[in-house]
Image (spheres, rainbow, N blue to C red):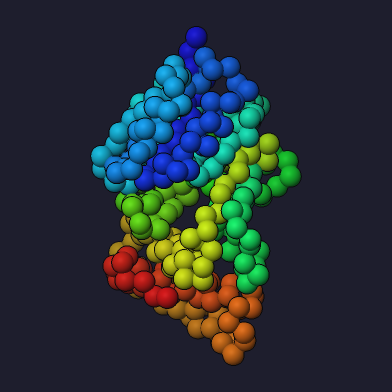
Length: 313
């Protein structure tokens, strides 16, 4: 029987989290002969290989070592080795609903013919108490996602699926060139955007993304991320990532990049004028506004050619 779907988990030095993710994939309601699990070890120096071995000799799970660091590189390595018609991606710190793969296949089969990407709801799991200073807005940057309460095609520049819960028709993903290896996490860097970039490319080719809330995963919020400094850094890298997507996909000239930077700087000034720095430092609204200001300034700096490791915080 031909494989229906390949579930791909890319991981880098996260062996302590990986086991739960893989166990959730091994416990899928979809018959084991219909899917495979590809664990892409992206240059880990921990016991990632040992964790995979500890789960036993599973006929539908394969360990692959990818020595070149980079999440996009690891994703592409997984696609290259996948035998399924569809490829589904989940993070190593997430846990899939038992019907995750089953619902992905059902979403593709019932969707319009031009749907090349499906994904769904991402629920946050708080390992420690949620900080009182954290408002609702920043939760999106912990990967929380729930666009609609029923299946819907995503349109507009703000509506995309998250990389920790998305699946593609493999043939179309490969024809589109896969994930941009100039984007995405690389070691400790918080560069992102490879998931959004490929969805934009597919939209440009007439393909659509579908959000289905029944395609669910739970995503851990790690304690080390519950600090003001991490949140500011995350927003800073988001600004850099958005600028890089625009530069790379639109092939902007230096003059065009300067024009974009000037327009965004005007928005930045207006944002800062409405932001009272006299408010309490842990006021959720003020924190969110400061995060947005950090994101916008880093977007501007990257548009002007400032290197990604020079963060404005």
